[in-house]
Image (tube, rainbow, N blue to C red; front, side):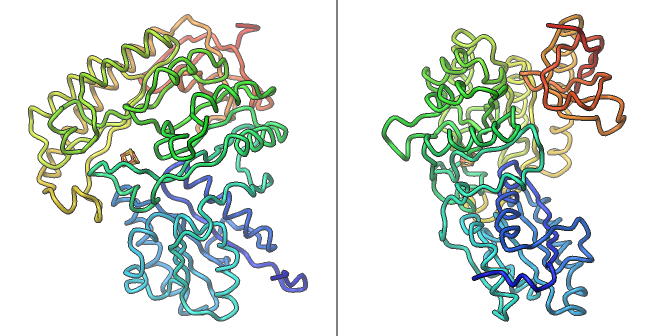
Length: 449
Ligand code: SF4
């Protein structure tokens, strides 16, 4: 359908919840709508289209969207032509039940339908009733990327793989994102080259189970080969990837991590629990011992790599002894970062159907705090060991608290603050570290590293 060039521009308010892949999906949605001459506003009250790109991984994220939808009821009564759209994982998980609770929603657009969001909005504006699009119209809408919609000049996400074929019992992703699908290495290299030509120096490859890349397409595709290809792209400074699964950390991939200069020295490898019985209930397919063996092997093959992890506390049936085992693992593994989550039941998962969420909220909270304290102590000690060193810092931009201070990251993802000119954004700058806390380093820019 051709856009009506004489019509006033329609304003879109798009709010994104959840993970990096959602933020990239929102960029794709913006691109589609911009093609139809929609413009974007940061003010919900002046928008003609209000869209939420949602997350279903934790109940809290869904609650926030429900609150937003409640708030919109009145606006929709006053302005029946307002288009309200719920996109992504929550739309996919709840399906039409969401429309029953919120009849003023016009569009449910699932995780594999982003590629036609423009068409769905146009249909609603043309008078169609609520539209439910939760199929697989366009499995990977990433190919037609509109570079003008990128939120950051120097860094970009690139989806290499979507969905997950595993069935960890706590995880809603296989239900909301469907089975694994992958893009070709040629397509990905072309996209990264286009991004670098547009000023990007820092690329993060995204996949729900990113190191499974290649197993669906067959042929010679693998994450290790993809990293080696992208490592040769001139102008690219840093290359990262999330999120990896432990049993898929192959010797080939370890070697590529060591060999590729642009690949950062940071690997996010979620362990989730330090207890074998808990890991079994989670259906993770490895033991604590095998995870530690992998991390030992990684240290031998790729000593530059520092490990980060995810941990869940209060999973169904987690006993004091199981939690103590997780605490013990954290002390032994010395992760550079650990993202700690209190378990919450997700409808549609095996844990919700077959297990009991029986750890009291107060116990989850206490375990969360204890683990955070232990990890913080490790980070403080490890960060303080960097005092006096010179770190190569990729500058993200002015810090949130003080515009005269720049914030950037080391290759191992440590946050660094230092005074410097805003023009350094997107450059790698040597910084001598003078102080450190558990969460960040600070220092002074030096002439060279
Ligand atoms: S591997 Fe990751 S995305 Fe897949 S089911 Fe397990 S936790 Fe979810």
